[in-house]
Amino acid sequence: MRILRYSIIAIVLYSYSFILQAQDKYEFTVVKEMRATPVKNQGNTGTCWCFATCSMLESELLRKGFEETDLSEMFIVRNAFVEKAVLYVRLHGKYNFGQGGEAHDVLNIMRKYGMVPKSAYIGVKGDETYFDHSTLESDLRSYLDTLIKKYEDKLPSNWMKGYEKILDKSMGRIPETFEYKGKTYTPQSYLKDYMRINPDDYIEFTSFAHHPFYKKFFLEIPDNWSFDLYNNIPLNELTEIIDSSIYNGYTVGWGGDVSESEFSAFKSLAIVPVKDWAHKTKKEKERTLEIPEKEMNVTQEMHQESFDDYTTTDDHFMQITGIAKDQDGNKFYIMKNSWGIRGEKSGYIYLSEQYVKLKVTSIIVNKNAIPKAILNKVE
Image (cartoon, rainbow, N blue to C red):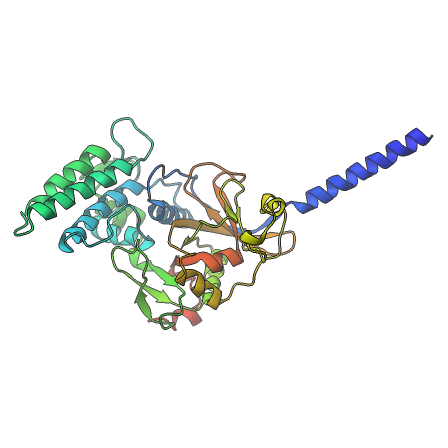
């Protein structure tokens, strides 16, 4: 009898400890989620801005009733390299030339060059499937630097031909026409007649107090190479726009910082704990993102300070596809990443509302999803 009693007690204690352990883990309930195309992999490139924005446009096509579409990110990237080269040469090399970019770059390229599906332009040489621009970037910059130095007195008018040869060798030539679903298109006609997406329907917002709210300003981040202007609004209205977009059936492009210790692609989670990482014990660090923690209530001042002291930079871009809540009712945004199918949520990451507020640099949304009260305030 005693042995049986001890066995029962042991079972009860084991079950209780299992329940406690289970309660310690994050548990999420999806509140609202939009359709999205499969997770992609940007490879060894700095093109998250393009993958996330193109993914947002693919979701727009799904929202409009189209079947699943795979747009060519590298069509945008290749043409962006051309536009960057023109600016780099005009500014005599005193300019940030690299792989990075912002959401508006996709729209700007679409306005000028159109768009193509991935089946028409993959953007790699030969039979390769992995994107790697480490050598391409250095080759392009080297060509431009040599050009500027050699022809500082008078630049030859045909300098772009040599530059495009490097792009052709690495990424392949862009077709002037292509077949898609039984019809012949040019990049411009594919955008206009098939996609029927107007780049002017999408608006970028940011939230920084060193410029007046409800005015446009040049956002001082290195990847804003085209010197575009952003609509500046208070932080609470920025999240209001995100929520309005999701609840009205539109996904959102989100740019921000993912360099924090409390961001993990492997654990598919990011939070802003009250206790600073530097003040945590070894055990507490090990359990971060394993068990729910109390988070900071991020303010406009905190967001600004984080940007001013370089702890928030423009190092990544993702697509917000939905909203979820944890077991305590805290809001999280469901982010589709572009690092391949990895992590506990197979390429998706749940960012807490506080993390999104603290680390955001910009968002891009369909103008039809913006609350009119906010839209009427901006220029």
